[in-house]
Amino acid sequence: MSHSTDGLKLIRVGKLVDGTGSPPIERAAILVEGDTIRAAGAEKDVLPPEGAPVEEFDYPDATLVPGLVDCHVHLIGFGDGRSGDELTLMPDEVLTLQAARNARTHLQSGVTTVRDCGAKNQTTLMLREAMELGITPGPRLVLAGRPMAIIGGHLSYFGVQATGAEECRAAVRQLVKEGADFIKITATGGSTRTSFPLRPSFNVDELKSIVDEAHRFGKHTAAHCTSTQGISNAVEAGIDTVIHGIFKEPDGTRVFQPELAERIAERGIFVNPTLMASEFGAGGHIERLEELKASQGLDAEDQAALDQMYLDRDARIAEFIAMREAGITMASGSDSAWSYFKLGRFQSELEANVVGGMTPMEAIVSGTHDAARSSWIDAQVGSLQPGKKADLLVVDGDPTKDIKALRDITDIFQGGNLIDRHSLI
Image (cartoon, rainbow, N blue to C red; front, side, top):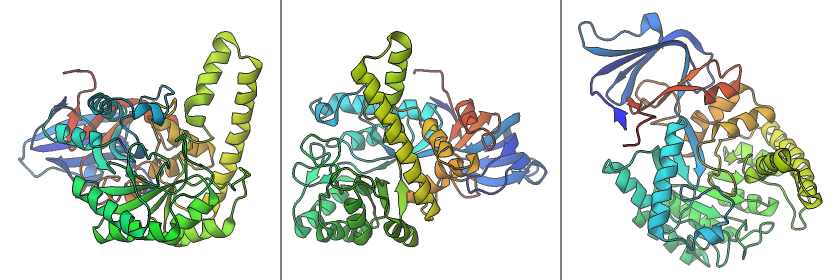
């Protein structure tokens, strides 16, 4: 539930971080009219019209940041270790209810916008309809609907399976008809049992037809890429966001390609590195095994698996650093709920960015302004600027000094409405 007025709100804070990377403003304020930011800046400069009724909020020791933008979720997931192959066997009605629960959880954790990168049938589209009817709350939704895959490819059990440029073009048109906001492409295999994660799926001609047709309808594209050749193919096709961006050869060896990274940077293509869902966090497996180790110990097999995960984590950090050094813009997205990574924990992705060398301010930008840019929704959200939606996160402490302060939430506003984080009605 949320508390709403259609009038003015004046929100005063100890510090304002606008999401663009600009220096924080001390003793700041923001003026909200309806669902829109009308002014933001130093408290002395942000004043409501004289004599106008205004609802006031004071947070003298808190920091105000934009509502977080998670540019990669799977709302129908459970995050309990079940595979996508298992997930697709569940009824659509159950998955839609799970998506609603996940959406509420993410909103109450401070994420006010999500980009869902692929779901079964019409489940997330039905969730959006329910949200528009006021049946259930959740973040703003940017939806792929069904993802695009080759026959037997990654997420093929959820999505549109297409072969050849003409089928790919027709599939884009079908997804647009169904209400997709963007097109999610699995440019390599992945965790799907019948796929090949180290090899490309669609060829370049097929990818180009998907991207061109999506752009013709004003839609953006994002491609799952867990191999170097898959990344290269997607870049050649004109993709807008590379998801994962893992540089691996068909035999599994990691060979970073500086020239490819430079092409990504030069073309302004975003990379959504999904650190916690990939080797850095192993999709929650590292945390699960560490908890098991602390409670009852690990057998030799599990300990060996955990040791390998830490080696893979080190390699992923090195890859992340190299991509940033090449000038690539990283847009944060969690890839939850997948594997053992539940929704509601997006802040851990931003914390992983800091481990990978970002400053806390850069991590905030990655999870707000840049994630919104990658999702083609930055005209509405992602930064605290006049004319944008009043999606606001009030936190205790200073996340520009300690990124973990983003977990210490005082209040959340979405579209100018104060979110009730306690009521279940």
